[in-house]
Length: 110
Image (cartoon, rainbow, N blue to C red; front, side, top):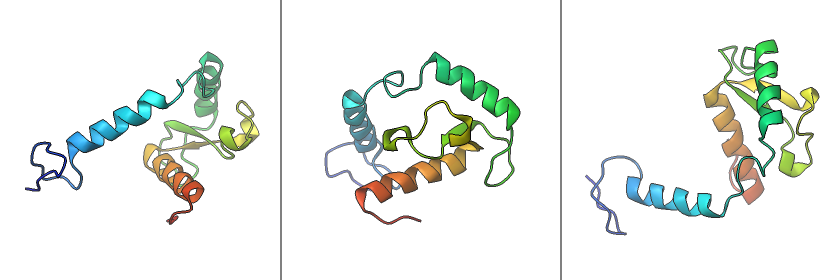
């Protein structure tokens, strides 16, 4: 068991769950809503149609359950253009998101 330097309960996971929860809550408190970030009803309908037309992950061929913007909306990518979308499974979309975030911070990209 590890002891949290911030005083949360002891833990056996790689990171303290209490600190992780607090960090996530602080981030979410200042983050715009999904609708303000462009993920509104129009996006949800397009996402549903895109996944029906492209049901497999473009990386591994597994069942896709997420739609990725090839060029992020924040970087000027077209929010609702099919040419800027690709279907991905959750693990591959998560890896892509993490790599993009690291690249923006100037960190290591895997």
